[in-house]
Amino acid sequence: MLMSSQTRVEEADVLIVGAGPAGLLAALALGKYGVKTAIVDRRKLGEVYGHADGIQPGTQEMWHSYGLREKLLQEGSPLIAFGTWITNPKSNRIERLNQGPDISTADARFPFEVIIPIERMEGILREAAEIYGVEVQYDLTPIDMDFRRESKDEYPLKVSLVRADSVELKKTIQAKYVIGCDGARSWVRTCIGLQLEVMEKEEEVVTWGVLDFTPKGNFPDTRIKNIISTPVCGMIGWIPRPRGTARIYIPLPPGHSAYTEERLLSTVQEIVSLAVKPYVLEITDCTWISTYTVVQAVATSYSVDNRVFIAGDACHTHSPKAGQGANASMRDTHNLAWKLAYVLRGWAKPSLLSTYDDEQRAFARELIALDYDIARAFQLGGNDSKYKRIWNDKNRFLSGIGVLHCSALTPTISPSPCAGKLIPGERVPPTGILRLSDWTPLNVQDLLESDCTFKLLLFIGDITLEDVQTRSETFVGLLKHRLVAHPGGEEMLKIHAILRNKKSAVHWTDVPEGLRDPLA
Image (cartoon, rainbow, N blue to C red; front, side, top):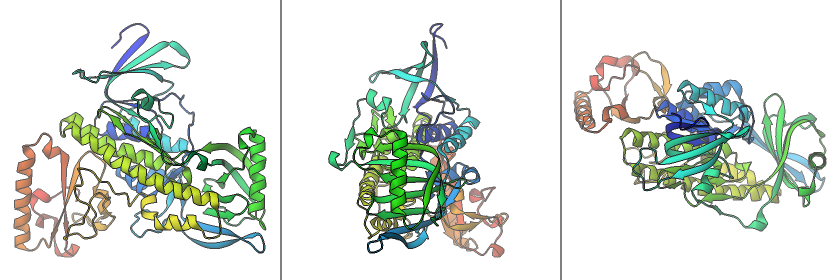
């Protein structure tokens, strides 16, 4: 559709502004769910914005549900161990306090982080989205959004965009919904009048230096995650990266704003050299160096009229110390995408979209409160290893596997007496199962593909008992009868029966026909 020779008009169910991890995950999910989706980014293809590179275990489970974790492992590096170093006040030299697993929680299916360069994190998501026909339109900057809030039009949102290399060439995208995944200085957030609520005092804001480099010297723990507590600067955070490289985070002394890049690099080298004595550590081949000042803040709302949404850094900002940047952002759009798809299909009322704000804003507030404690531990340092204690105590939450969603979708958070270890609002814990038809070993999470369907797991017990078979057949028959009466009911629910039998004692045909998944 063309309005003029210079302005192209496109229509989409959902327009995503910003093609970082949050936007690309939304594009992948919506494309997979059959939603007509457009995604734009002001960058040119190949330009990198942001340097998040750690994928937590909970996010790996999410990627696994989209079929992407194998690709992640092929291109990323596992981060398994965590070391703590302290400065001996008598000798003024660092000593290793302990080593241990980075992920210490017992119910992690994937008990380690994966480090992957941001360009490949985005690349994997972008390539997966393209399979479903969603391609990023790069080099497009939004300049105006017309939100006809009272309109009954099918497309109440109209966003005008311009290419940086030709201000005369405009494009307009008309959409039913808009998701702003456009970073901490979000244009979308500004357009809809949402504010970030700062959750720390201005005088407590600390500026950090961060750099990627190749370490040389005799410091022994370059290939594991480290926290080095030192009176020189408080704490140094060390993250190993692919191909023998590393990233460090260092709180900077006053006056850093006047530093040139060369001065900043020499200052960091001086701090590191003093902090790691008696070891020698030389910073070589520095590929990226920067400073950042992060204010812990969360948006007052994540949407306006359940039509325009914000996600990722557009609605919450925090330090990278907790390793949550891209993880929290992708969690936002993973939560939102299926809800948009349900509403667009007519499977759910628009009120379902309100649960996105309820669930994800509560998560962000908890994360930011924890991030504040972690950042303060970094700043203050000391030999009590406070950071390590926080990391261990909150490992389930920080790893992404203990996040609790509270909304109208989970009216209770008390476990059922029938399943005391299953907490409503948490993810389904990993458990080994066997596919009865061919004895293929699986995990219960393998049944939970992100495919826009609900999954009903029936733990029906011993299938050889006649009353179990009868009750199962009756239940499934009644359930399917009710589903037929609901728009899309039969499509939106997959039923999996989990038996309590020895594999050699039963056959696939012993399972009631209504429960026989051809792949189960």
